[in-house]
Length: 89
Image (cartoon, rainbow, N blue to C red; front, side):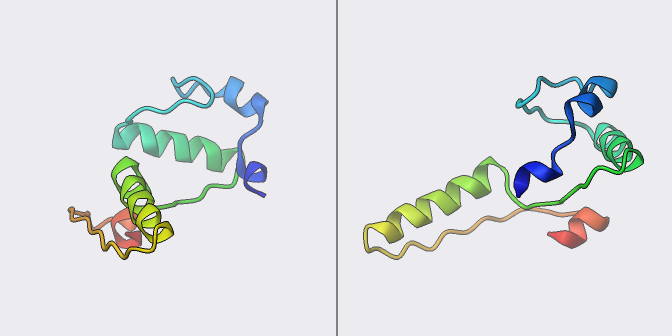
């Protein structure tokens, strides 16, 4: 159940993350660290998942081609760091 991992309304109200509920924005590494620290201190579940608009678009295009009986191979290139998140990817 995906909703079980979401922070409660109380958590969102107590820790303003400077983004509207349901919204998104690009954050700095310092902001990311602060958000994860706040969620962990409140014992909220956190999860790292791959994605992003380019990756999600490529998956969607590939699936649309497959739904029409075509094979479409897609690729993406980029750089990753040597930190824990870089190791994950």
